Length: 254
Image (cartoon, one colour):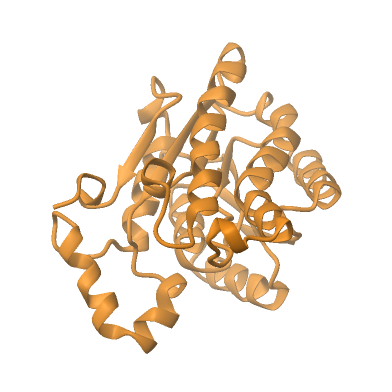
């Protein structure tokens, strides 16, 4: 029997990159996986790919920064399946770069919405269904930028990820009485389409990134998925309010 057999797992931002590998891994672990995204054609392709691999998967297209859309769709998922066992708040991103002096309020709010609002909206909507789940858990995504405040122009991204680190611990406190665990992962530099632009336009810069990683290479999406798989399983039954670094030692710097 697979370690998460029969569980319902919702993964936001799951049509590409790390999110899709997480959904695939949870499916291989025995979960029915619910993929979320905003590219509906891609979402259907991903579901077909998982179905072809023997994984039960569904796709729900909605914007995780839209409170009403989140409530509507999470309610649909929860009522259809009667529960949610695993919520992976994978959706998020840099959202662009801006120094604070030139930063518009619109840009500030959009990055905070993408990373913090989405985590709050989806978690809040899922809690009633997580209470019905088996050893239910939430897994959020923070970043090294939450500690070092990000690179040039990424200050508000770092700020939003520091907030995700805090809300992870706050949710863990809030939900412990229901046996719902809440943890976060903090991926380092992972080789995904997220970095496609710099990889194609400045390959020398992209290649140099590994010099700041103790293990001397970039991470793979499958390596993040393996840690999420562990946190989602009963093997991590006594872990809550933790953030796991998945960065090859990048956080320490060399």
